[in-house]
Image 1 (tube, rainbow, N blue to C red):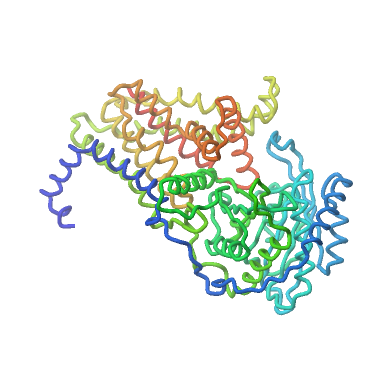
Image 2 (cartoon, one colour):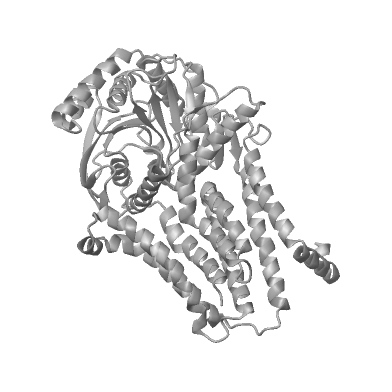
Length: 604
């Protein structure tokens, strides 16, 4: 502090930072990327451990014996589903009543803001069925949830069968201290959102029409969403990324991994099976791929399973997917049922909500984690580039001999940039009917093409707005505007990284170099190309190609473009249906900030 309080030392430090600004910015940016790449190494990714005392041991004797019964239930459910042409409500009600559960059904309806062409639906109607097993040793103050999405076709019928077999077995046990809810939800996330809103008596999205939940259990402590693709399972894949990048408490992930190890089940994350040789280069590359996949999925803000909507209600949840692949190890329903039984018996021992372990983390594998205290420095180094450039702009503004422009000179570009962002947010959905009347496109295509048109047209609007007032076109004017844009970008990226590190880091890694380099006096074509490559739309497109490469399913240019258009439509739907924040964040904040930088480049 003495160095900064001494005026002579402060001026010397300021001159040093100004003189070495470019090398320091490059060094800080490289350090940020290097720190991120190093997070897959064991020193920065310690082994996971159980923090909750009530779940610290897997010493539970699982006795689930009804594997064949689960397969029989699954076959019956598939036959009834095919006969009914959808979820067999009457059969499920009768079966659950026969198992001794309190059974309730919840009809719901939802009209989408525009047709979902990937799933071919617009006006969605469905029914959720759930049965409640009352705890014999408590007063229904707490509960657990086992949910199974009722997918189209024959998929997930085995999961329904296993859920019913578990309900039959749990009904005969006397040690339950929490109610257990067995839920079959129709239309994947839409059904789950309808059930959660009705159960908690809220209306988050405002457009869901539902009869409400007729029966309630205690406050939900934890939930597991189960998906099975076959009668035989070779491995389990765990999905943790929820809505807006939320993650469940790490203890819940550790608990499932511990019971998989106990029962000899292979368990993966991001489809990657962890390696034991951590000190080799192939193992590091494997961990880095897993880490990057999690960052890309978390940054999208899209829930990777039904569990993702539970997290909004402070309910810890994961999605467990049974995979039947080419691996030689096969596991029957009895082993899978014992694993879930062990999990629920451990969760039954909880005296309070899961809170002792981490809520902010990244997973290079299921046995190692990167905590928030380790991954935030990577983002800090990237933001340091903006801080150094801010210092540079402040010194330039102080040294400039031109009169300081008034604040009114900055109002036109600010207003125009944010008006373009507001149009990008509102017009695609509101103007879809007008677009379909004048152009030969469907409503979904009209929404996506309107987004692209407004996005591209916005680049032509603000670059001449500063000429509306006298004095706005001076050198000191663009320096002041860049200073404002850098402050704006640093503030929004910092807020994004605190809530969703992956989104903040991906935007910082692409936008910071262009933001620091942009100016109207340099090689304008080069800077324009750099700025266009740093736009959020290009970041999304590159992220799609990277995601397919990491999944070892590389996409061509044509397929990548189709995936890009689908991602745009999915982003709008996720926002309007579930309240996902990436689209409004990018449209109302990031895109206007990028347009301010484009304004700086086009300053005359």
